[in-house]
Length: 314
Ligand SMILES: [Zn+2]
Image (cartoon, rainbow, N blue to C red; front, side, top):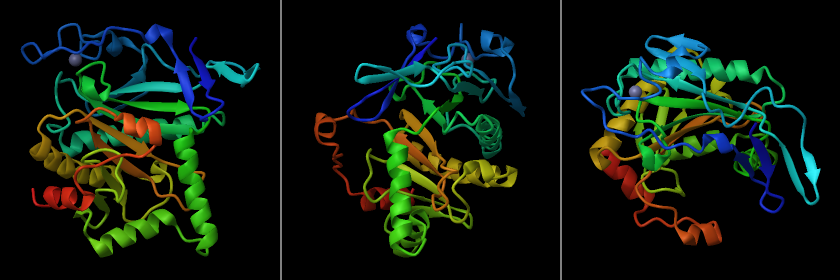
């Protein structure tokens, strides 16, 4: 059983899951297939319990879950520290039968199935009142954290929000108090659309942009132009429209950066009425800097306005 520990100084959580110490199964496709790949059509994951299916996409429990829904008990004090069993959920969406298919090659229809499956699993996991920190993540290539190079993503649920999510909720609640209930996310979206300097592409439903203060080079966000705090409230039409927008952004990033390692993260906060869900895309093209570790301050060599203009022109 894994364990969750909370840092008493910084407030973040750490998952201790010693049985996940495995050799990454990263290898080039062999004749289009992944010899020994756990997620391939003849791999062991395909014999695990199926939690959902859409087209060629299937979602299964992680074979080596970092967290388990069967975990018991709450936080226990150990002197000045707190620990608990590794409560949560950790599921894998196998996105294709084709080993080695990259995000740049996936079609809007394929990604729409992935997004719809993710939404279905998040809705199901929300029924467990113990789970409050839910997300969908997709990583591409080992440098971004992928343990297999079969196209996949993960649905993850923890018992409480980490400091990052808590700060985002706090910022929205404070902004609403100081601005007659207005939504910080909505006002940012409106400002970005009016200003235009950091917008990469806007269609009737979604806008992709480079954030005003990006953590990572070529970081991009996709925001719905209207909607609520929860990605779980979207429907299949939204999935297809989002997938089309996402494919367009992925194409621009591929043109700019080639087959770069990539992380995609969903931010969804149903409990915060003024929040607006979004996708964050982070190409992994440089290592974290000691300056950031020391100060909590990121450093960028290229202004986000120039990055946006470059991507906009591709
Ligand atoms: Zn495979």
